[in-house]
Image 1 (spheres, rainbow, N blue to C red):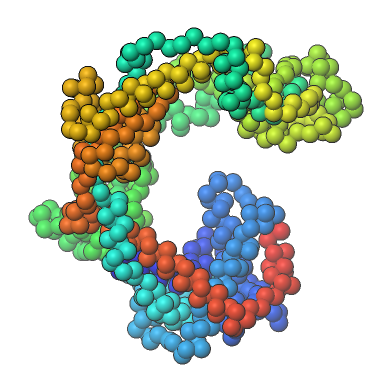
Image 2: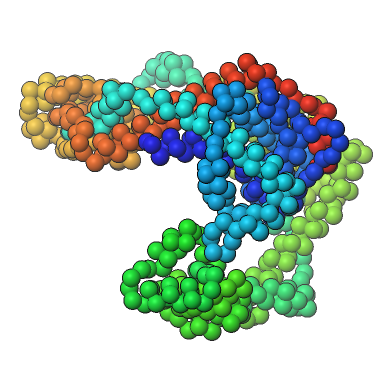
Length: 615
């Protein structure tokens, strides 16, 4: 729990540091000059204009990395990224204002420790590097005094936040109650009565009985609102067979993808770099003597294994170290050997064999891919002209007659999922389609296109009895069978409650022991587990199903053992979650209260000036 508190209390101290540092080396810096230097303020704490610009830039880059494509600023605005960043910076400024009002500050020793903890300021040996520090700040357009003042303010704000969160622990009674509830287990025995348990046959219904059951269960036979849609569509699969790919194009595609079809042997390698040959050799000697393992050497340097991972790599990529690394077996640590960062030890974690695929073997794959790609491009080229035809008054029927597009009709409901309704784009368009909409070309996800016309909207309506009579009969018979089986089970309830065995009642009982409330992965009939945890010890329940009846006896209730490993784990989990929830509520209340008392001012003109630089 203490670790959780520390994680929460550290959250906002790293927000601005992340904004300032994460993108320093890769994204460059944005600087604004002139009389306006603040995007806003909370009390006496300013939100720097440059800091806002960098934070927004990094937020956009993070989204681009996540979705794998550029994010124009207009899209970033639609996603709410500027407001999200500004909100985060307002919260940070509010904490800094309050810390200043309370005269909270940190000393030089704490400041130095925080600087050493920032990865961007470390050298190749894993320690703080003065040149890396100066270079990173220069790239960000910051002076050392400016950055250190910001860092000092944030550390003071963290002290304030930690003081608020320190009182977020919950009473033991609360956690104990949750553990007692979640950790309780039960033993029960159950049996299912099916059609073979009936002692009498089912009655034969008359038309009046079926009609009455139909009326009582009319929701089962009511169709949802249905849109009758005529559509024309064209997909790459429809025309792929007519697309020809010549041999020269196939050969050129094979040559272009040679690195994909013909890969040299590769190794999964980790590399630990040292400052000099003596340090590297000393580590190798300790490793050879069995004094340490590779993980320990990495940890001693203040690094994680992820920091040493080179991924899968070919021999030429390792330079002079390639020969010794590729002579090693899986699990071996070799070196010292040269690297572009200095002498290093290398660990081999796996061997990926060379892959050789001939042109003849690759040809079918290449032909399919090229044909589909050309089919997509053919459709893409036709898209605008087809849209122009529709705009000029052509009907979907005429479009299908004069092009490769196919005509179709669908009675569409939100449950439709076959044919063209399997495409998200079609479903979204069908959902929004109205009487006044004219057919226009829209794109499908596979490179195809479609256009649609709404012919009719059928409101929700019951299906006529004559059309669903067979389904009504099946439903009536199932209901009658369930009721008869429930009566059979009720007749056995008393004997089972008195302690007689299931076998004595000609039932095949299934005994379940130590079952918890969350054991929904067990292969139990629906409703059985929930019912078991509403019963008292020795109780017998009858549960109706679909054409069956379940009979359930609760044999024993086992209270949670507070000393068991499972209970301890539950207590830790519940405690962490509850404390985190309370801590977040306290923090939101604190931030809101500070902003109310201190006042928040936002310079929208300055912010808009920042936004112009992104467009």
